Structures are given as C-alpha cells and as structure tokens.
Image (spheres, rainbow, N blue to C red):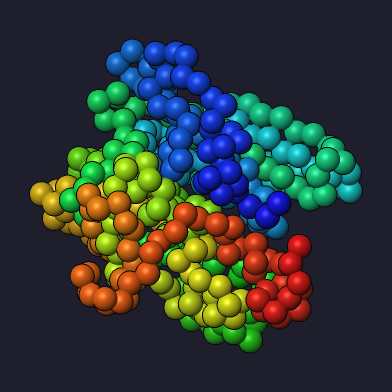
Length: 345
C-alpha cells in the first residue's frame, strides 16, 4: 500500500463503513474531513482528536502538540489537555525520548494546555520514533463547529499559506539538499513560519465571527482540505489558484523536489467557510490580529469542485480530486537530489 493516510474511498470502505452510531450523546462521530469527535457533556461538548507524527525527523514533540491542538481549534473549542504516546525503536536513546517529551511539555505549557497522561514504550514494531497525541477540548454546544457545516454560497478563506508544515519538515530533514536552493531571506522566512504552526488563535478569532465551518489543513494539503470540506458539506466549490498564498521559500522547496505546494501538508493554515454577510467582519478580525487571511473561492450547490487558473467562470479550470498520498512522502523519499528523480520507499 502507499505511504500516508488511507485515501478517502479506502477509508470509507475499510474503516468508517464498520462503525455504527449507537449512542445519542455522541454529537460528532467519525467522517471524511471531520477533524474531531464531540460528546454531549450537558451545556458543553467535550471535543477529542488524535494524530501521530510520522513524517518528521525532528521537532516531533512540538509538532505532536500543535497538530492535535489545531484539530481542536477547528471545532471552535478551547484545548484543555493532551495525552502523549511515544513509541521508540530499540536503538533509541534515553536522551532522544527525553528531548521529545521536553519539547512537547514546553509547547503545551506555551499553549496553556496540560499533558494529562500517555504512554512511552521501546518496541521493535517501529524503526523510528512515532509520537502520537490525543487532545481534549471544551466548547458550549451551541458554538460547536463541524467541517460538514459549510454551506453553498459561503466564501472560502485560508489563513497563512499553503505548504506551511511541509516546508518546515523538508527544510529541516532535507537541509543539505536545500543549502544551494534557499538564501538567507528564505531561511528567515522559514523561521517566521515555524512560529506560526498553531491555528488555535485562528480558531478563536473565526469562531467569534459566526463562521459555518473550519478545517485544519493537514495531509493532502490545501486542495485535500478543500475537497474534504466540500465532501463533508455535500457541496462543490470554485477556487482561484492564484488567490492561494504560497511563501517564496515554499515555492523554492517545492520546485526543488518537484512537488505541488497545494498538495503538501499545511498544518498552521486554517480553511474557513463563512457566510457572505460575515466575510468583512472575518477579514477585519484577522487583520487586527496580524494573521494573514485570503479569500480563495466560494462554495457552490453544484457538486463539482473546480480549481481555476484565472477568474471564476473562465474555461481554464481543472477538477479538484480526492486527496491522495501527501507530497511530503515523495520529497522525503529522495536520498540524493530532488525526490522526483529518486526511487521511492
């Protein structure tokens, strides 16, 4: 099988198809594009999510915290606690485990979230460190958001830029490949991007603007997240490629590895669906918070998902397909030069 998340069709058949809804206190269950589960806790909902970090060689502790908290933020909830699992191969050192745990603890403290449990194990079932986190959040039930809450006619917005997390992973794990590609300005830009991998502030701002849906942009990149939001909301979209922001350093990295930045893992960016009457408020709120936000398209009743090269309605467009294997794995597979010219794992 291909490396990465199961594609949606296989996921639906092999995993989701076997799960039945049996409890009324489950407000949000598993589904394509849904970032979190939610349980009825009276006036509030308990929101939960879980994610592993497998594609990064460094900063696994920091990424494990942010990736999970980003999912919680997409539901409009306040993150409260984290459970952290570390599976280490037999050749791992105590110092390596300690470094991951210390980084995770520091990041959680910075985000005002407590690590409330977990599990640490040495096992020959893995050949490199696997870090998995489960996050818990809380939100008043009336403010709980689902990815499937997006509606036809909504404007579609993206915070920050495409390929954010993927750029950071590749600039760290394939630094030697990129020394001749990136200049000092690019490295400074990447350093600034590293401080922006959390979308918890994005979620707080957007949820205060009566948006209909949010979706954390992870594996599959921006196009994958768009497809999943449309799938969850049973709608289509018209997206303008040139409206999707891409940092210069990301363009250079993706050009070197011959990958599409719109299909590159992008934790740190949030996809937001907002009604037309709330768009101005949303844009103003993000600008006042000094967080970049761009309108990239609109959701439609027509189920077709279109990516336009020019203006919406022109003849030059391509369909947005269900997300496949994230481009990060293609790039990481390269051992001597661009991954596009190297054998794959």
